[in-house]
Length: 127
Image (cartoon, rainbow, N blue to C red; front, side, top):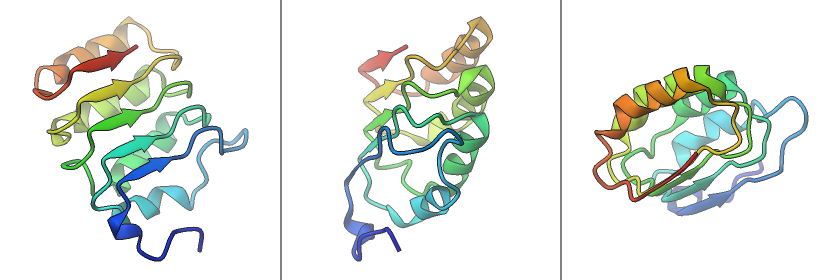
């Protein structure tokens, strides 16, 4: 397996530029349930689309601990932002959210705007 032995103690995970043209590998999404102390998650430049993002969000068990979430330079689009916005309220300690270069239109921004009010710890938003 590609996971470290003690993955439950992992606090930072940087997985940028590590996926092929098909986006995030299927094996990645289920692994997120093991990262219970994860604070920093960087998945930039992985060609993730809304479906990939949904799989990852479904597998995550770390919303309470995440302080930095970087999904920049993917293909999330407004559909993915709708899915992310629906789960953002779980990210109570999120301080930094990076979503730049994701083909997000006004509809996606509207989805995001409704959930941002609930992110009391947020201090940096990169669109």
